[in-house]
Image (cartoon, rainbow, N blue to C red):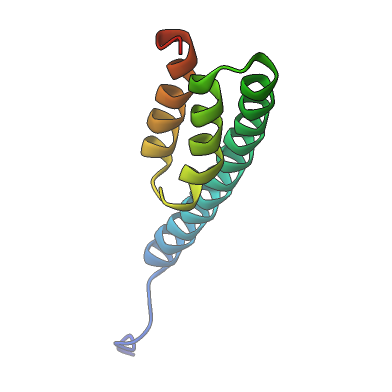
Length: 92
């Protein structure tokens, strides 16, 4: 009996399930990194206001806002690390 053309083989189904799991894991990782960066941004804002330092204050605002605009996990981490380093590099 010939196989139906619309049916997937077991290996194709397993690959699709694995791909869907990876996309879910990536979205979940992006979500948690965004939450962590937002919390660190709030901490930078509080620190910048109490110490009257401009660089941590602005970095904190950007740390809270940028996860809404960056979708890639790699770029989320790269931009976050750069913004976390700004107050240590620039002393305003």
